[in-house]
Image (cartoon, rainbow, N blue to C red; front, side, top):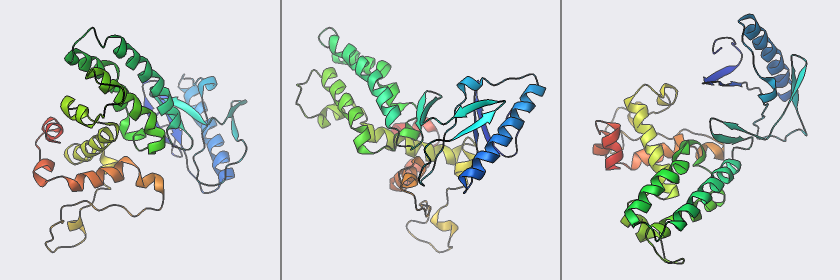
Length: 277
């Protein structure tokens, strides 16, 4: 299916497929998307494949004034716009503020924190820490590169839940400061998890062929001049106008990467890089 269209940018994972199209004119974008999507459906039918249109969603991403509602027609069935949808375990919203996803995982984490609280006086701290890594930490790390750039206001609930979990693990008081508790447990806080993942992402861009698209965007200062400078191996931040890109994992990863010592950047394996950082 990945090669059935030259108009859409298609991505596929297991049985989930996404078709992306962009245009400066919304009306033209909708017309082109509808026409091409029906062509894709014809191609699928010819190859004895079918898409469940009842589970097919239409989303619009734009910084301009949004119309009241949009839709396209596929095989005579209307596909209406949605403001959010679940994609590979992440709640994707059309404003990309990640509030819906954060609310979703906050409810999951809250239940796990309650379990931890019930076991507070049953198990020692080392067991509680293991339970934290099993029941809570995965929610903070899964696709964190994507949603970790959310504003502090949206992340506040996750921060509070994590602090609550740490106090339970350490059997600390309700109002005890958590900075030293995180240090003693050697646990990363919410913002540190995101910074760590961003730095690891840049390392993997350099040392594998997994992220070829992003690797092409990583340019050092030495790429622009031949003379020796102290920061010749530092990465240059792209010139952008959108705040969303300024908050993105690529931009933040470049900032974090430039703060690292060259010896850390030259770590032989991802594991050794993660250990040192």
